[in-house]
Length: 379
Image (cartoon, rainbow, N blue to C red; front, top):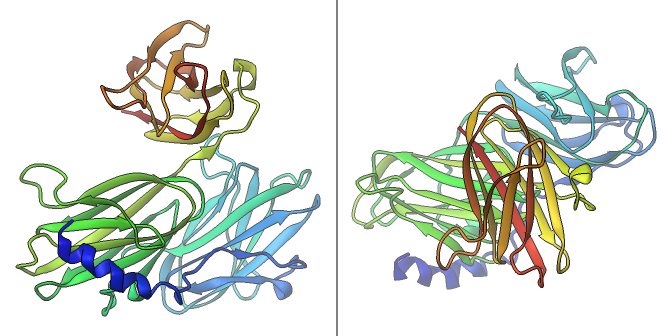
Protein backbone atom coordinates (compact mmCIF):
# COMPACT_ATOMS: atom_id res chain seq x y z
CA UNK A 1 0.00 0.00 0.00
CA UNK A 2 1.39 3.42 -0.88
CA UNK A 3 2.26 5.90 1.83
CA UNK A 4 -0.55 8.25 0.80
CA UNK A 5 -3.20 5.74 1.83
CA UNK A 6 -1.43 4.69 5.04
CA UNK A 7 -1.05 8.30 6.05
CA UNK A 8 -4.76 8.86 5.67
CA UNK A 9 -5.44 6.21 8.31
CA UNK A 10 -4.55 8.61 11.14
CA UNK A 11 -7.38 10.85 9.99
CA UNK A 12 -9.78 8.09 9.01
CA UNK A 13 -9.60 6.22 12.30
CA UNK A 14 -10.73 9.34 14.15
CA UNK A 15 -14.11 8.94 12.50
CA UNK A 16 -14.59 5.44 13.90
CA UNK A 17 -15.22 6.30 17.55
CA UNK A 18 -18.74 7.56 16.96
CA UNK A 19 -19.53 5.13 14.19
CA UNK A 20 -22.00 2.30 14.80
CA UNK A 21 -22.44 -0.34 12.13
CA UNK A 22 -25.23 -2.88 12.30
CA UNK A 23 -24.73 -5.86 14.56
CA UNK A 24 -27.14 -8.77 14.63
CA UNK A 25 -30.23 -7.96 16.68
CA UNK A 26 -31.41 -10.26 19.46
CA UNK A 27 -34.81 -11.94 19.55
CA UNK A 28 -37.22 -10.55 22.14
CA UNK A 29 -39.72 -13.09 23.48
CA UNK A 30 -42.68 -13.48 23.39
CA UNK A 31 -42.71 -13.42 19.57
CA UNK A 32 -44.73 -16.54 18.81
CA UNK A 33 -47.39 -14.82 16.69
CA UNK A 34 -47.23 -12.44 13.76
CA UNK A 35 -48.72 -9.66 15.89
CA UNK A 36 -45.78 -10.00 18.32
CA UNK A 37 -43.11 -10.40 15.60
CA UNK A 38 -39.65 -8.89 16.10
CA UNK A 39 -38.30 -6.63 13.34
CA UNK A 40 -35.28 -8.02 11.48
CA UNK A 41 -34.65 -4.89 9.40
CA UNK A 42 -35.60 -2.70 6.45
CA UNK A 43 -34.79 -3.74 2.89
CA UNK A 44 -33.24 -3.26 0.29
CA UNK A 45 -30.14 -4.08 2.25
CA UNK A 46 -29.70 -6.73 4.90
CA UNK A 47 -30.58 -7.57 8.47
CA UNK A 48 -29.99 -10.36 10.92
CA UNK A 49 -31.22 -11.46 14.33
CA UNK A 50 -30.09 -14.10 16.84
CA UNK A 51 -32.72 -16.36 18.31
CA UNK A 52 -33.44 -19.64 20.07
CA UNK A 53 -36.17 -22.22 20.08
CA UNK A 54 -36.21 -22.22 23.85
CA UNK A 55 -38.94 -24.78 24.47
CA UNK A 56 -40.27 -27.68 22.42
CA UNK A 57 -42.98 -26.42 20.06
CA UNK A 58 -41.81 -22.78 20.10
CA UNK A 59 -42.28 -20.77 16.88
CA UNK A 60 -40.49 -17.43 16.43
CA UNK A 61 -41.93 -14.71 14.19
CA UNK A 62 -40.04 -11.84 12.57
CA UNK A 63 -40.96 -9.17 10.03
CA UNK A 64 -39.22 -6.93 7.53
CA UNK A 65 -40.38 -4.00 5.40
CA UNK A 66 -39.38 -3.97 1.73
CA UNK A 67 -39.33 -0.55 0.08
CA UNK A 68 -39.12 -1.72 -3.56
CA UNK A 69 -39.49 -4.87 -5.66
CA UNK A 70 -36.47 -7.10 -5.02
CA UNK A 71 -35.33 -10.70 -4.80
CA UNK A 72 -34.94 -11.53 -1.11
CA UNK A 73 -32.80 -14.30 0.39
CA UNK A 74 -33.79 -15.68 3.81
CA UNK A 75 -31.60 -18.21 5.63
CA UNK A 76 -30.79 -19.62 9.04
CA UNK A 77 -27.22 -20.16 10.18
CA UNK A 78 -27.18 -23.01 12.71
CA UNK A 79 -26.03 -26.56 13.32
CA UNK A 80 -29.57 -27.50 14.36
CA UNK A 81 -32.62 -28.53 12.28
CA UNK A 82 -34.60 -25.37 11.55
CA UNK A 83 -37.58 -24.91 9.29
CA UNK A 84 -38.71 -21.51 7.99
CA UNK A 85 -41.69 -20.00 6.21
CA UNK A 86 -42.23 -16.68 4.44
CA UNK A 87 -45.67 -15.08 4.84
CA UNK A 88 -47.24 -11.99 3.31
CA UNK A 89 -48.92 -9.21 5.31
CA UNK A 90 -52.15 -11.25 5.44
CA UNK A 91 -50.45 -14.35 6.83
CA UNK A 92 -50.53 -16.30 3.56
CA UNK A 93 -47.54 -18.67 3.26
CA UNK A 94 -45.52 -17.75 0.16
CA UNK A 95 -42.63 -20.20 0.55
CA UNK A 96 -41.29 -22.74 3.04
CA UNK A 97 -38.04 -24.64 3.49
CA UNK A 98 -36.68 -27.28 5.84
CA UNK A 99 -33.09 -28.10 4.80
CA UNK A 100 -31.04 -25.91 2.47
CA UNK A 101 -29.22 -28.96 1.07
CA UNK A 102 -28.72 -32.68 1.63
CA UNK A 103 -27.29 -33.23 5.13
CA UNK A 104 -27.35 -29.47 5.82
CA UNK A 105 -29.99 -28.78 8.45
CA UNK A 106 -30.11 -24.99 8.27
CA UNK A 107 -32.81 -23.49 6.05
CA UNK A 108 -32.83 -21.21 3.01
CA UNK A 109 -35.35 -19.76 0.60
CA UNK A 110 -35.33 -17.03 -2.05
CA UNK A 111 -38.32 -15.17 -3.47
CA UNK A 112 -39.10 -12.26 -5.78
CA UNK A 113 -41.19 -9.84 -3.72
CA UNK A 114 -42.97 -6.54 -4.29
CA UNK A 115 -42.82 -3.65 -1.81
CA UNK A 116 -44.59 -4.29 1.49
CA UNK A 117 -44.38 -5.97 4.89
CA UNK A 118 -43.49 -9.66 5.18
CA UNK A 119 -43.23 -12.13 8.05
CA UNK A 120 -40.85 -15.03 8.68
CA UNK A 121 -41.61 -17.96 10.98
CA UNK A 122 -38.77 -20.10 12.39
CA UNK A 123 -39.22 -23.39 14.25
CA UNK A 124 -37.50 -26.69 15.02
CA UNK A 125 -38.35 -29.08 12.18
CA UNK A 126 -40.19 -31.81 14.08
CA UNK A 127 -41.30 -29.72 17.08
CA UNK A 128 -39.56 -32.29 19.29
CA UNK A 129 -36.39 -30.49 20.33
CA UNK A 130 -34.98 -27.11 21.29
CA UNK A 131 -32.44 -25.03 19.33
CA UNK A 132 -29.96 -23.21 21.54
CA UNK A 133 -28.79 -20.74 18.93
CA UNK A 134 -29.54 -19.70 15.36
CA UNK A 135 -29.04 -16.60 13.24
CA UNK A 136 -31.75 -15.50 10.83
CA UNK A 137 -30.22 -13.59 7.93
CA UNK A 138 -32.37 -11.60 5.48
CA UNK A 139 -30.98 -9.68 2.51
CA UNK A 140 -31.79 -8.54 -0.97
CA UNK A 141 -29.78 -10.25 -3.71
CA UNK A 142 -27.92 -8.72 -6.63
CA UNK A 143 -25.35 -5.94 -6.54
CA UNK A 144 -26.07 -2.74 -4.68
CA UNK A 145 -24.68 0.59 -5.93
CA UNK A 146 -21.99 2.76 -4.36
CA UNK A 147 -23.25 5.91 -2.65
CA UNK A 148 -20.79 8.79 -2.67
CA UNK A 149 -19.26 10.36 -0.64
CA UNK A 150 -17.64 7.20 0.82
CA UNK A 151 -13.99 8.22 0.92
CA UNK A 152 -13.47 7.72 4.68
CA UNK A 153 -14.12 4.77 6.96
CA UNK A 154 -16.81 6.72 8.80
CA UNK A 155 -18.67 7.24 5.48
CA UNK A 156 -18.19 3.67 4.24
CA UNK A 157 -21.10 2.12 2.33
CA UNK A 158 -22.45 -0.86 4.25
CA UNK A 159 -22.55 -4.06 2.17
CA UNK A 160 -24.14 -6.49 4.66
CA UNK A 161 -23.31 -9.67 6.54
CA UNK A 162 -21.18 -12.69 5.77
CA UNK A 163 -21.16 -15.69 5.46
CA UNK A 164 -22.92 -14.73 2.22
CA UNK A 165 -22.00 -13.41 -1.20
CA UNK A 166 -22.23 -9.63 -1.36
CA UNK A 167 -21.43 -7.30 -4.24
CA UNK A 168 -21.51 -3.60 -4.96
CA UNK A 169 -20.95 -1.63 -8.19
CA UNK A 170 -18.75 1.46 -7.94
CA UNK A 171 -16.40 3.72 -9.85
CA UNK A 172 -13.25 5.73 -9.32
CA UNK A 173 -14.87 8.84 -10.71
CA UNK A 174 -12.00 11.29 -10.26
CA UNK A 175 -8.23 10.85 -10.09
CA UNK A 176 -7.23 10.06 -6.51
CA UNK A 177 -10.69 8.86 -5.45
CA UNK A 178 -10.79 6.24 -2.68
CA UNK A 179 -13.93 4.20 -1.96
CA UNK A 180 -14.64 2.48 1.37
CA UNK A 181 -17.13 -0.30 2.10
CA UNK A 182 -18.04 -2.08 5.34
CA UNK A 183 -19.25 -5.59 6.08
CA UNK A 184 -19.83 -7.65 9.21
CA UNK A 185 -18.66 -11.19 9.90
CA UNK A 186 -20.89 -12.97 12.42
CA UNK A 187 -19.14 -16.35 12.62
CA UNK A 188 -15.55 -17.34 11.79
CA UNK A 189 -15.46 -17.22 8.00
CA UNK A 190 -13.09 -17.71 5.09
CA UNK A 191 -13.60 -14.43 3.21
CA UNK A 192 -12.51 -13.56 -0.33
CA UNK A 193 -12.55 -10.00 -1.66
CA UNK A 194 -12.23 -9.39 -5.38
CA UNK A 195 -12.82 -6.72 -7.99
CA UNK A 196 -14.23 -7.32 -11.46
CA UNK A 197 -13.16 -4.52 -13.79
CA UNK A 198 -11.27 -3.48 -16.90
CA UNK A 199 -9.41 -0.90 -14.83
CA UNK A 200 -6.35 -1.33 -12.58
CA UNK A 201 -7.73 -1.57 -9.06
CA UNK A 202 -5.92 -1.95 -5.77
CA UNK A 203 -7.72 -3.04 -2.60
CA UNK A 204 -7.03 -3.22 1.13
CA UNK A 205 -8.77 -4.99 4.01
CA UNK A 206 -8.99 -3.25 7.40
CA UNK A 207 -10.26 -4.34 10.81
CA UNK A 208 -12.64 -2.26 12.95
CA UNK A 209 -9.80 -0.06 14.26
CA UNK A 210 -8.55 0.76 10.77
CA UNK A 211 -5.53 -1.55 10.98
CA UNK A 212 -4.51 -2.87 7.56
CA UNK A 213 -4.87 -6.67 7.42
CA UNK A 214 -4.04 -7.28 3.75
CA UNK A 215 -3.41 -5.42 0.47
CA UNK A 216 -3.50 -6.59 -3.14
CA UNK A 217 -2.89 -4.90 -6.47
CA UNK A 218 -3.09 -7.58 -9.19
CA UNK A 219 -4.27 -11.16 -8.74
CA UNK A 220 -1.80 -12.26 -11.45
CA UNK A 221 0.66 -10.88 -13.99
CA UNK A 222 -1.17 -8.85 -16.65
CA UNK A 223 -4.45 -9.23 -14.75
CA UNK A 224 -5.36 -5.91 -13.17
CA UNK A 225 -8.23 -6.87 -10.91
CA UNK A 226 -7.52 -7.54 -7.25
CA UNK A 227 -7.98 -10.45 -4.83
CA UNK A 228 -7.61 -10.99 -1.05
CA UNK A 229 -8.42 -14.19 0.86
CA UNK A 230 -8.35 -14.35 4.66
CA UNK A 231 -9.96 -16.20 7.58
CA UNK A 232 -11.78 -13.62 9.71
CA UNK A 233 -13.26 -13.91 13.20
CA UNK A 234 -16.56 -12.15 14.01
CA UNK A 235 -16.42 -8.37 13.76
CA UNK A 236 -16.70 -5.30 11.53
CA UNK A 237 -14.34 -4.98 8.55
CA UNK A 238 -13.68 -2.41 5.84
CA UNK A 239 -12.52 -2.63 2.23
CA UNK A 240 -10.77 0.23 0.44
CA UNK A 241 -10.73 0.38 -3.38
CA UNK A 242 -8.66 2.78 -5.51
CA UNK A 243 -6.97 3.06 -8.90
CA UNK A 244 -3.48 1.57 -8.59
CA UNK A 245 -1.42 4.55 -9.72
CA UNK A 246 -3.83 7.28 -8.57
CA UNK A 247 -3.40 8.69 -12.09
CA UNK A 248 -6.55 7.51 -13.89
CA UNK A 249 -10.26 6.97 -13.37
CA UNK A 250 -12.10 3.64 -13.45
CA UNK A 251 -15.55 4.10 -14.99
CA UNK A 252 -16.89 0.91 -13.43
CA UNK A 253 -15.87 -1.91 -11.10
CA UNK A 254 -17.70 -4.52 -9.03
CA UNK A 255 -16.47 -5.42 -5.55
CA UNK A 256 -17.43 -8.96 -4.50
CA UNK A 257 -17.23 -10.14 -0.88
CA UNK A 258 -17.75 -13.88 -0.56
CA UNK A 259 -17.78 -15.66 2.79
CA UNK A 260 -17.73 -19.39 3.52
CA UNK A 261 -18.54 -20.26 7.16
CA UNK A 262 -16.04 -22.28 9.15
CA UNK A 263 -18.07 -24.64 11.32
CA UNK A 264 -16.77 -24.61 14.91
CA UNK A 265 -15.14 -27.74 16.27
CA UNK A 266 -17.25 -29.68 18.79
CA UNK A 267 -15.16 -31.33 21.51
CA UNK A 268 -14.54 -34.10 22.30
CA UNK A 269 -13.58 -35.15 18.77
CA UNK A 270 -10.34 -37.02 19.35
CA UNK A 271 -11.40 -40.41 17.95
CA UNK A 272 -13.06 -41.57 14.74
CA UNK A 273 -16.23 -42.47 16.64
CA UNK A 274 -16.39 -38.89 17.98
CA UNK A 275 -15.33 -37.17 14.73
CA UNK A 276 -17.04 -33.91 13.77
CA UNK A 277 -19.04 -34.57 10.60
CA UNK A 278 -18.44 -31.82 8.03
CA UNK A 279 -20.94 -33.34 5.58
CA UNK A 280 -20.68 -33.86 1.84
CA UNK A 281 -17.82 -32.09 0.06
CA UNK A 282 -19.10 -30.26 -2.98
CA UNK A 283 -16.67 -27.43 -3.82
CA UNK A 284 -15.46 -26.48 -0.35
CA UNK A 285 -15.88 -26.98 3.39
CA UNK A 286 -14.31 -25.23 6.37
CA UNK A 287 -13.96 -25.92 10.09
CA UNK A 288 -12.36 -23.88 12.87
CA UNK A 289 -10.77 -25.44 15.92
CA UNK A 290 -7.91 -25.43 18.39
CA UNK A 291 -5.41 -27.89 19.80
CA UNK A 292 -6.46 -27.25 23.38
CA UNK A 293 -3.54 -28.99 25.06
CA UNK A 294 -0.37 -30.92 24.29
CA UNK A 295 -1.21 -34.20 22.60
CA UNK A 296 -4.76 -33.19 21.61
CA UNK A 297 -5.95 -34.57 18.27
CA UNK A 298 -9.00 -33.26 16.40
CA UNK A 299 -10.79 -35.63 14.04
CA UNK A 300 -13.17 -34.68 11.22
CA UNK A 301 -15.11 -36.70 8.64
CA UNK A 302 -16.40 -35.81 5.20
CA UNK A 303 -18.04 -37.67 2.34
CA UNK A 304 -17.57 -37.65 -1.43
CA UNK A 305 -20.47 -38.76 -3.58
CA UNK A 306 -18.31 -38.70 -6.72
CA UNK A 307 -14.55 -38.87 -7.42
CA UNK A 308 -12.69 -35.60 -6.87
CA UNK A 309 -9.20 -34.23 -6.45
CA UNK A 310 -9.31 -32.96 -2.87
CA UNK A 311 -7.00 -30.36 -1.31
CA UNK A 312 -6.96 -30.30 2.50
CA UNK A 313 -5.09 -27.50 4.26
CA UNK A 314 -4.77 -25.64 7.55
CA UNK A 315 -4.34 -21.93 8.14
CA UNK A 316 -2.75 -21.18 11.51
CA UNK A 317 -0.02 -19.41 13.44
CA UNK A 318 0.84 -22.76 15.02
CA UNK A 319 2.67 -25.82 13.68
CA UNK A 320 0.00 -28.27 12.52
CA UNK A 321 0.33 -31.78 11.19
CA UNK A 322 -2.53 -33.47 9.33
CA UNK A 323 -3.35 -36.99 8.15
CA UNK A 324 -5.98 -38.33 5.76
CA UNK A 325 -7.53 -41.79 6.22
CA UNK A 326 -9.94 -43.87 4.16
CA UNK A 327 -13.09 -45.49 5.53
CA UNK A 328 -11.12 -48.55 6.72
CA UNK A 329 -8.66 -46.43 8.70
CA UNK A 330 -5.77 -46.84 6.27
CA UNK A 331 -3.50 -43.79 5.92
CA UNK A 332 -3.73 -42.11 2.51
CA UNK A 333 -1.38 -39.18 3.14
CA UNK A 334 0.20 -37.03 5.88
CA UNK A 335 1.79 -33.59 5.88
CA UNK A 336 3.62 -31.41 8.37
CA UNK A 337 4.61 -28.15 6.63
CA UNK A 338 3.32 -26.73 3.35
CA UNK A 339 6.78 -25.34 2.59
CA UNK A 340 9.93 -24.11 4.30
CA UNK A 341 8.91 -21.30 6.62
CA UNK A 342 5.18 -22.15 6.39
CA UNK A 343 4.15 -24.40 9.29
CA UNK A 344 0.56 -24.85 8.13
CA UNK A 345 -0.19 -28.17 6.42
CA UNK A 346 -1.57 -29.34 3.07
CA UNK A 347 -2.53 -32.63 1.43
CA UNK A 348 -3.64 -33.02 -2.19
CA UNK A 349 -5.06 -36.37 -3.28
CA UNK A 350 -7.36 -37.86 -5.94
CA UNK A 351 -10.15 -39.64 -4.03
CA UNK A 352 -12.95 -42.00 -4.99
CA UNK A 353 -16.48 -41.65 -3.65
CA UNK A 354 -16.64 -42.63 0.01
CA UNK A 355 -16.22 -41.47 3.62
CA UNK A 356 -12.87 -40.04 4.74
CA UNK A 357 -11.34 -38.95 8.03
CA UNK A 358 -8.90 -36.12 8.75
CA UNK A 359 -6.81 -35.85 11.92
CA UNK A 360 -5.26 -32.51 12.97
CA UNK A 361 -2.61 -32.21 15.67
CA UNK A 362 0.34 -30.10 16.78
CA UNK A 363 3.51 -31.37 15.09
CA UNK A 364 5.65 -32.03 18.17
CA UNK A 365 2.76 -33.13 20.39
CA UNK A 366 4.16 -30.91 23.16
CA UNK A 367 2.26 -27.66 22.52
CA UNK A 368 -1.26 -26.45 21.95
CA UNK A 369 -2.49 -24.31 19.05
CA UNK A 370 -4.90 -21.52 20.07
CA UNK A 371 -6.72 -21.54 16.74
CA UNK A 372 -6.62 -23.00 13.25
CA UNK A 373 -8.96 -23.35 10.30
CA UNK A 374 -9.26 -26.51 8.22
CA UNK A 375 -10.14 -26.07 4.53
CA UNK A 376 -11.31 -28.72 2.08
CA UNK A 377 -11.57 -28.01 -1.65
CA UNK A 378 -12.85 -30.52 -4.18
CA UNK A 379 -12.70 -30.32 -7.96
